Length: 479
Image 1 (cartoon, rainbow, N blue to C red):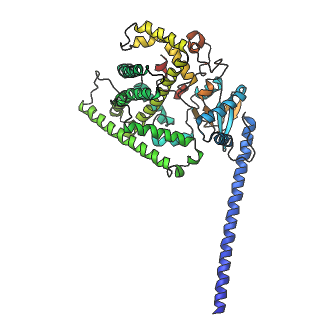
Image 2: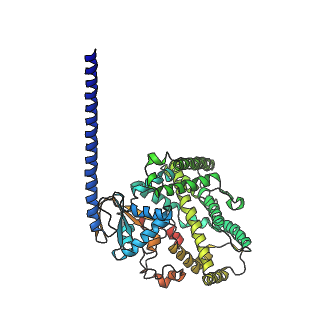
Image 3: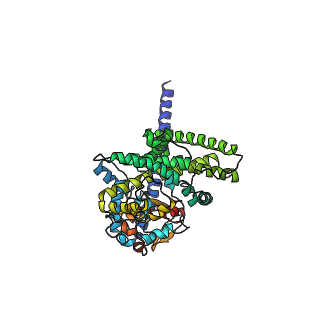
């Protein structure tokens, strides 16, 4: 018996030793393999870094330029886009003569474009219209709508939306803009008796009323109720949570993010929005069918009506597609409009001489009848106000950044850019190029008078992006 027990013990020890050696061998193989892969990418990064201007990263620095951003986080207790903007602005001044510079997101090159001529090479061509891989984080919100889609789907969707979003559509919305704006004016007039008032919230409510009416075809009365409907709150917060995710590297992997508290909250908000929008689309479908598929020319159409017309005429838009486009327009139009109007009023408050000048222009248009609705002709006469809005959008552009994916090895400004790199244009930095805008921190609407804009590079000012993937309403807004 003792001999059998000793034999069993030795057998167990041998098996354990074999398992242990196998484990160590696999561990060594994984370690060596990882080191070889790391070395390969490190040498590749070093080679690219030597060819493109930018801050050089340490040879074995896995994080690349992320460490510089994390240092900012340490100093400011949190990391957000503002602090990243400060860092990139410093880099832009340092590398301004090179027109671009490279920062490294671990082993992924980000090419930051800082000069208008380089922006034109990126945005002014049909060769670089693909969005980068980061936009996949926004697919739960925008689905495969115009903001996210690419290739042939984007081209067909863009063509369709260009037909919907014509000047005639915007002109039809003018009564809505007048009606909702008068409510805002009445509120602000009551606020003038105070020393200080917060303007963003009432402006946001006004923008909500206008967008819901013109895009979704519904009246929500946000200015009267002073609150957001649940589906609006869900859409806004879902988008903001996704923006926060993009600035937190620990939330980039889906399997981590969707198990986190914020990931679960985001999914809940998006589900609320999608349920509402599908219900809305079904109701509008029934209304459309009751009209025997005839177009009511006397009826002012919202965007949802136009999309449904296209759906019934061509059958190439599903209910989900319509919902994706509606959310894309809602998100793109709400926060950006609210921010632009708020910044405009803020700057007019800082510069009373400019405020007086635009006041005189409006007095010359409306005379003493301040209650009269603005007409299409009136808008064309607001030439100095247009300069003020353009200068506001220069200083505080509504689009945080514009990105494009480099789908093949290419040459940009004389530098070899590798396939897979991401080109980033940050309008906030581009619009502060002193070669194009002297004294860029000074609010000067005269920059946009016709005689002062003639010689400016067409890609020096891109508040609505530029090129094939620019804002759908850009041309109408510029008219």
